[in-house]
Length: 541
Image (cartoon, rainbow, N blue to C red; front, side):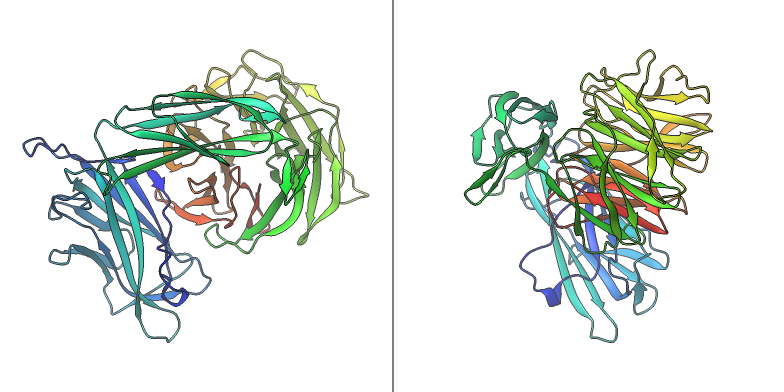
């Protein structure tokens, strides 16, 4: 299922804001309008609304209504609602169609019911016969709810869903390379249909690229997000699809007022959540020049990131609620992309060098100085196909150190390190990976190796590997490589970067994720995640 994050209608006041949070998924993505010929079969679509309570106290809810416009006009989503199959996954609730109001009404068996922070659910509208007019349809979700003993009131959220021509497509928007030195060049490429206009947008630039499928950008001096916007349909009710791609600049320029600082760095924002669906306010406590890595080890939580000069890795440890000591250099190599795990009483680090080779180091705890580590010298990871174009991932699985990585040909592979120090031949993790696949993330749930990777077009797949098979578990949509963590009860938490530029976490209590913003601030990568001390920890960059 492709998750599309929408924003709440900004016209509502704070008192009228919904007490529940909503995100919308569509299949296909984007939705397709049915052919204009009334004799042709209708296109079929599906809309899934993920619902959660992000406050620590329950909300009382009388009902939730989903208004779906139906008819023959461009703002209509469906031709007819009578054939739509509605379903709500919340126990004790039912859903029915109020045909005159064109609303699907979800209600509990009693007069109202509490929905707490642990109650995530979905409202699914399947078998939707799509309208025959290209355009944007407003889907209105209204809840009647209250907190405490206050009066019930109606609270509304509006989602605008586009219906595109059946032969429209915009996909594989890539920026290569994704990490450059200050002043480096990148090449943007994409695939698109001919029945739309296209614009490329980034700071200070709005360029028509309707007749192009690639563009070279020279002299990039700061981290940049590129947006590719497609517009098609009737100008009075157009449909718009936006994809984004990022480039990270080592030692980027930073402009503050009239002061231009060359070789600057990012503040890292740190926060925690009890369950991944309700995040505490972020704190600016760390700095780095590349996305960090979080890893629990020996009863402590470590953060490892590139130094602000971009030369080597730095590490620090969470001591209660404060990161200390001040970050200490871990190695002198320019390891641009790295990953960590605990294994056999040591903290292991696998990192990628600019020539696509990988290195291995491990840190041994110093009993005299809790939180301090003594690091080994770098050792090369050598073997057939043991090279990667992206950040690798590493975890401890079946008594071996397991490295998962993206091969230069696009395959996602894994290799295990024996106790003798040799690496096994690379094995394929999944067959969905393509040349556009980005860095994978790996973790272990029980005895099962779990791998998440971003594939075309911006989908994140999670694969569970046992001794029999590898299969797709669930999917979200991201414009950056994902991160992955599991809580103590085995719940998956997938970190990803939404199309709105905000870092998010999808918590999978079942196949339908509960989506939550980790921070309201714009980020350039998915949040780094780790489960430790009964909490989910996140650092955004």
